[in-house]
Length: 116
Image (cartoon, rainbow, N blue to C red):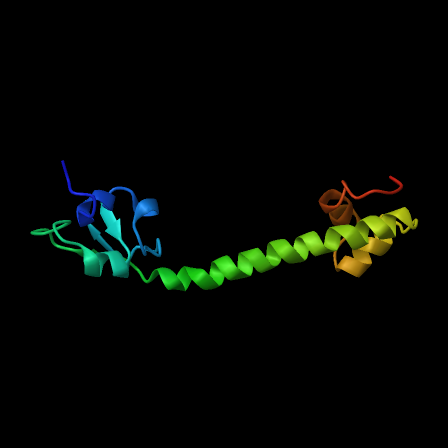
């Protein structure tokens, strides 16, 4: 039985590793470790050639942009619903959104208001 503080006990469960940032930078066999976990490892990967992984922080910009797009998309739904409730035509909404009437209607079909 491993002692409670044994560093290798989290090697296959990164979600339980204390201080782990969950962004793997190196892999030893099937075990991927963040930089902090790699510095603190004891027996994990000893004798194995480390495989250095691409910088995970290069994905951070993409994740941030995707989340911003999701927030912006959500921010459009309420004004579109209000415009439809006020009687605005899909053609007017298409122009306001910089798209076609059909694209606006397909994207925001769930928005409240008249169906014409």
